[in-house]
Length: 320
Image (cartoon, rainbow, N blue to C red):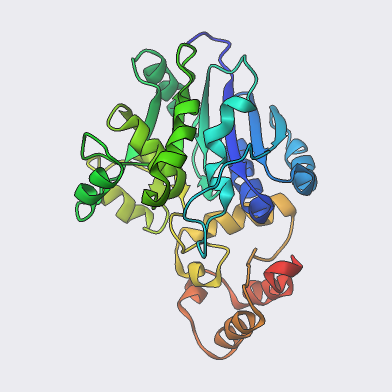
């Protein structure tokens, strides 16, 4: 990798995740010291305009380019009554949008925050990828209780599985694997449980480099627990991933110690003194208000009541 290396950073999301993605990008810009290109695949780019302007004003050396996703006719499986949208599949179409000059890229989920300087770790990861026969670096994440079923369901050869929340990828100029990934959407269809992550695992199988866990650490654990669940006890997370349904912008997720990172970045980016919270109904907002007023819920250990009350003005999700 030459000295003129410039990171290509990819995000894929829809307008329902504008704030979360903006916070993630902002945290990245705060913790990456070199210049970079940021490519965003979005269902409605105009809705992200204000955040794009804010991010451009941070002083970071970043070129932000947005593309509007146009579905060429695919039906995306397993989305009914789920906490994810079709945007989770967008990254399987990146070859249709990225400039031809892009030879490799780092993909990051919008529900991540970067908490330490990642400049060196990212450079080292691309050096390893570019010097190898592989096209992917991802964090191995095997559930011993389900791996046999998963392997059979996805018609994989090996009992391996990776989390696709943070990935380093290089383009195969001789054989466009994105075309094969899209074919798998239809072939797997009802067998798909974990959306595009299943598709990626079915295709790459065990042919990938294992990502250093500090670049995709489960934010639902405390920092000390994250360290103690890895073989390297001195490992300190650099990227936190808010996996699953327990998100810091949901009031139930406030009890997670690491939710503080998300809200601190949100307040800094927007220069406000309130948390970013989404409520699915007026009843949920009322319940949160009553719990905060009259009880001592677990999340008051992480946030002052004044800050929590300030946050109530965010109101219902649809009013944000």
